[in-house]
Image (cartoon, rainbow, N blue to C red; front, side, top):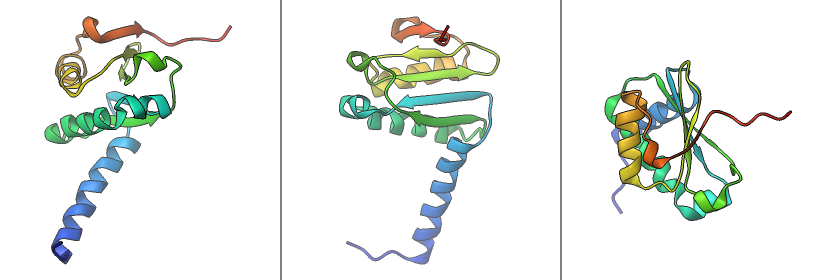
Length: 127
């Protein structure tokens, strides 16, 4: 394995700053990847990587990426929730990297829900 140079460390630091700012910032869109044990075993890490790649390519700075635990629908994992500013959240199920790319292009960037992959619109409320 090649030795790391100071320039390599600088590049890693900059890349991680971008990833962390995506998780901590505020923006017009928020994407939550469900990363409970069931989600991880179903492939949620690949989904998270695909989302980070989509967001990093645009470098808009106004899309938040975060994770959560199990959403209670283990058989539908991997899942993610997309929330656009001023709109109800949409929960997407049975995801693949290809589906993520389509959801990102059409819903996150275009504002059009991808009904073929969506389970529900809105949030559950306890009465």
